[in-house]
Length: 416
Image (tube, rainbow, N blue to C red; front, top):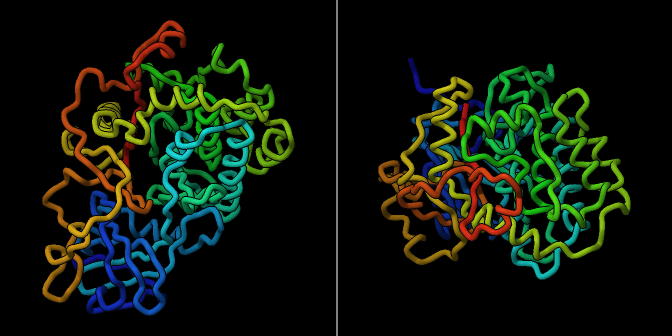
C-alpha cells in the first residue's frame, strides 16, 4: 500500500520551502504539526505557516481541514491563502491573526457592556451563518477559537480552527466530538445531530461573556454531562441581576435542549439583543472579569489536567472517538509572548533538502488544538493537583464568588 497523498489541482510544489518564505519564529505546535510566522519573500506579506510531515497525514485532520477551508471566504473566518508540498511535508499558508483570544481582550479592557458582547456574538453568528449556508458545521466553537484580527481596538472577530469541522450535504452527523463545556446535549446523548450544535455552543459562549462563568459546572464529570444533557442551567442572582431580559431570552433560545426548536443562526441574527437596541449599555466589566479570572485563569484554561480527564472519561464511556491523550505533565498552558531569536533558529528543524522537520520527540510544548494565533507560546503545565478539577460543587453561586482559587472547565477533548 502506497503513502496517502492529498490530491488537489491548486497545490504548489517546492523543493525548499525556505526559498518561498522567511521564517520569523515558531508560534504554535499541535500533535502532528508546527506553526510558524513567516514572511513571503515575493510580496513581503506575513502569514502563519502550518507544517505537517506527510507520514502523519493519516493520523491528522489536515485533509478535512483543507477541504473545508478551501470552500470558505468570509471576513470573520481565518482563511487558507495557499497550499504547498515538498517531498516530505505539506504546508498550509494561513491568514495571520494577531489580536489575541477573546477573553484576554475583555480582561484587558477598562469598560465592558452587554453591547460589546452583542457585537462580538453578531460577528460570530454572521461567520457561522455563512458556514451553515455552505453546508459546513464547525463543531468546536469555543472562546479559544474566537480571535481578534489585530490589536486595534475595533478589530474584527475571526473564527478559527476547523480541524473538527464537517461538510454535510444531508445535514446529519453522528461522530461525537467537540469540547465538553460547549458541546450540545444531543452529542453527549450519542444521537444524530445537525448544524444546530454550533448554535448551542454560541449560546454557551454568550452566557460566559455576560457573567464570566460557564452555565454548567460540576466537580464530577458524569454530573457535568448529565446537566448538559438536561440543559440544566440558571441565571443566578446577583450575577445576572443587571443583565437584560432580552439577553436571557436570546441565551434561552440558543441553549434550547430540543435542537429542532433551537434558534438557527438566521433567527439569532434577527433577535433584538443582536439586531436591535435591547443590549444594555451598563458597565459589567468588574463582575465579568472577576468571574473569568476565577474560572479560566486568564487564557491558561488549565488544559493539562482537564483535557486528559475529559478524554479518559469519554474513552471509558465509549462516547467519543479520540487519539491517545498525552499525559497531564506533557500538556501545556498557553501564554502570549513575543518571538525571540532562539525561536527563529531553524537549523534543527530542516532536513538536508531544507524542508522543515517538526520535532515529534518533545511534546512538552505541544498544544492539543491546532491554532494560528500570532505570537502563541506554550509552556508545560506541570503536575496536576487535586485542585485541578473541573469545578467544585457548590450549593450556591455565592460560594463561587467568594473563592480565590480559579475554578476551571474541561479543556480540549477528542478528535475523530
